[in-house]
Every structure is written in C-alpha cells, then in structure tokens.
Image (cartoon, rainbow, N blue to C red; front, side, top):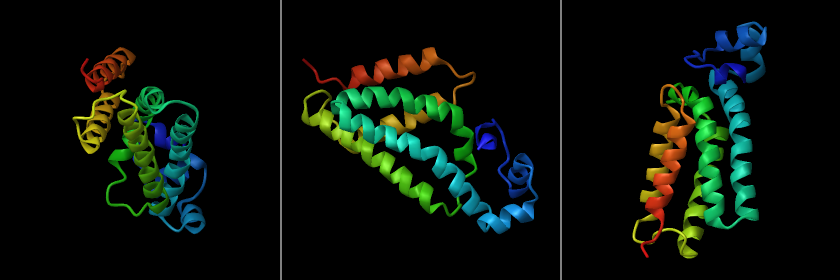
Length: 165
C-alpha cells in the first residue's frame, strides 16, 4: 500500500515485493500475478472512498453530499494520482467494480441535487459528471499540490452548477 502512495513509483511485482520485504516469487504465488496483486491493493485503497460516498448520501442532502465529497475526492486523488497512470490495460475486476460504484454514487448525488433544485437542470448529468471527474483529476495532478487551487476549483464548480435566480 505504501508504494501506491509514492510519487513516480514503478508498480512492478519486484518493486512491490521489495517494499513488502518479500521475494517476487512469494508475491506471485500469493496473488497469482501483478494484476491480481494491484487489484487487491487498489481496491483496498478505493473501498473506503466508495463507502464514504454512500455514507454521505445516506446522511446528508444530495447537494451537501456532493459538496463534501468533491473536496474529499480531490484530496484522495492528490495523494494517489500516480497509481492511475500505471493501471491502464490491467485486468482489475474488484477495482473496476468499486470505480463503477463510485461513479454511481456521484451520479446519485448529482441527480438528487438536480431534483432538489440545488444544481442546474439545463446541463446533462453525464456532462456534469465528466466536468467533475476530469477537472478534479487535473487539480489533483497540480504541481505542487495546492489546497488553495483545490478550494478555488470547488468554489467555481459549485457556483457554476448553481441554478440561475
């Protein structure tokens, strides 16, 4: 898990095994290969984020859940964005399922906030989801990481989603 948080870490079986103090063969025997190992590690990292999104939906209005979760998501992405660069093309079924659950939770926040009149209804929900996803991803990659930039992004995004008077 620690290797996943290191900037520019190379996620090879050898690097993972070395970080864990194990041999590469031991890691392969335990997990069956790099894809399965990374799927286990990344899904373990992502599961609390998905649970947090669901918890916010259960205990706050959709708009409050969205506002709170976006800030937390940017913080998470800032800490772990390097992982995403190395996952392309890998078979990660648990991670894919959690990612789909995360998108579904954010879409539920958006739909609920639209229904409640808290955000604009003239924008397609898929467009809003893409705006959130891509911009949050870009903010998380800012060098150096900046809470001021993240806060400004959230302010501008949320102001832009507010319905016109």
